Image (cartoon, rainbow, N blue to C red; front, side, top):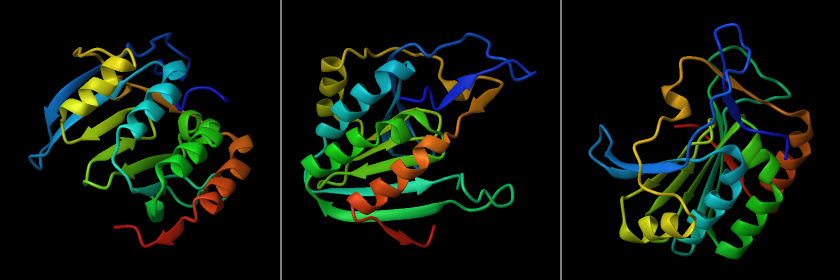
Length: 189
């Protein structure tokens, strides 16, 4: 595993030593959706993410959003590239995410959106935060089983300065994930 997707830093870019505490809280989005926001330390991210993915109903759909193309970054503010597959078996998706863990859980170039057969969603963003839609008792149970408690925790998004990591070693992992899940590029919306 290369390391965390992102770390809290001082204004000069040096790490400030802050590490997220494990916890989740419920909220309502500006669009009126209910969701759970989950923050865990980097070493817990792969296990908790995969545990929550197992709580989604089949079949699964995957959106891999490449926020930064590390090979050809383009100008600041370039739109992300979206790769999608629908109707996938959960075992296939979980296996692919496990194999691509250095990329998914340790590189800030991407977000991964999983959608269950009932329309529920799990989003892992470029900072390492997770969001579950809707706020459902099954997800609260999965979080409890993963050892993540309800708590109003400070998240990386609350920090003043954040450094993101992009690892060259994850370039072939990204290509293998896209090919392995049969993800097709679609126009970004």
